[in-house]
Image (cartoon, rainbow, N blue to C red):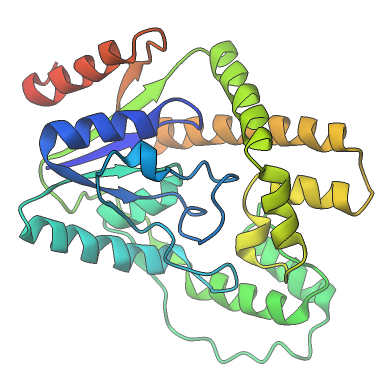
Length: 289
């Protein structure tokens, strides 16, 4: 059995995944693109050892910040991990927030991995950046680093999906979505940012601020906003407000993706008694209602 837990940030996905893993003798596979990287703990709300409660987690902390990792790589790693866990007789729970990762892992997604031989050295940084935006207009990349621009462009070209498959490749898969009202969610996101700052988000951002800008360091919400503060472009208060605003926008994009791209059974979270939500999900899995 494979259980996929979806939903926007700060809605309780990690907590539900642990409860279901204990119930169903399952191990957890991460599908968050930032939690792939080592040391990006606070910005990604990475599950802690205490939160894991002894449940094995996979595809977390497998890359350094300066290593390339694409959705194509994730597809290979996730499918290999599914095979490994199924051979061990384990059930599997996917938890994360990167919708394209879970689609690529479980559905008939194919990628154009034909290597490009284009020589981009003759292009200016502005021309490289323009081509990158044509492939991904939401990407964050260091516009002043030509080597990084060339590498990003090649990766994007090689990762172009040429078949957006709707065919599910696995049997006995349950898609569980967690949701709540917008006001409650936004309050929880704002509170989570405050907790992240208290737990050392600024110090974590400073660690990566001194290093080369990579796709990994420019992806998490929290780093780039604080980088602006470190550069003296905004005040600390303005940076924090921007982190909260961007987190809320990201949650909205997540919710839209999961609603539109996947067939999910949604559950309204009871934050006063989370066990009520857990039991509703278990009842659905076991009885289909």
